Image 1 (cartoon, rainbow, N blue to C red):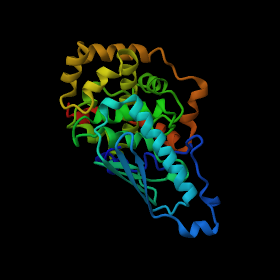
Image 2 (image 1 turned 120 degrees about the horizontal axis):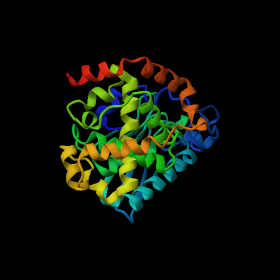
Image 3 (image 1 turned 30 degrees about the horizontal axis):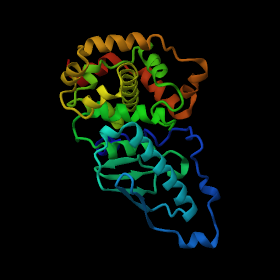
Length: 301
């Protein structure tokens, strides 16, 4: 999540109850050896083959072994992005990473990444890394910035907010069938974007916006390829740019996508997300909302 969305999205990842598969470190069973008294407060990960250097600030006081594990995961994520999304990488020489204490939401500010809740397995490593490596324009391109980050974390099996382990299209189908759907032209309007991601104003609406951006992005990439999506990433006037690249109107693509979504009914074994404490509360707020009037209120229509 970019810097502005972090401040607007506190609690989005805070209270989510499911842990990331294989990534959780038990903070109650930390290494207590003499080695732990000499923990490294700052370290580096140098990837000479790509000309990238990560400066890591260890505010969590991880042991050398724990820090080594984090560096391994970071390198794996960076290599994955280099292999699969190389045209988007802006090639900054240095990136500054802080493993932070507290229960805030992880965020990116330029070439600085702040990871929170790492010891709980809730730090979205590849999601935030994609924002930093790809770059972004503040106040522009929100839909594609978050859309591709959600797409990547799902492909990479980083099972976190907004859909955890539930397939993104199935969760989108659930929203559409319950008439909790934001027209794409509205969601792509940068003047309105912050109102949708502002969980202080409406956390449930933020949930929908992230799922929707991730689902539409996934549809475009799966059907039309990554190369075309790369051309619309982080672009202002996104509706116009999409029509130029895909040679179809946004309405046509939206109809295609919704027809596809209609075939992706949420399966019983994937409805567990709706019963997790955090998402259960979020889902109730969403279903209780006067959704159509809320959209009219936001758009002024």
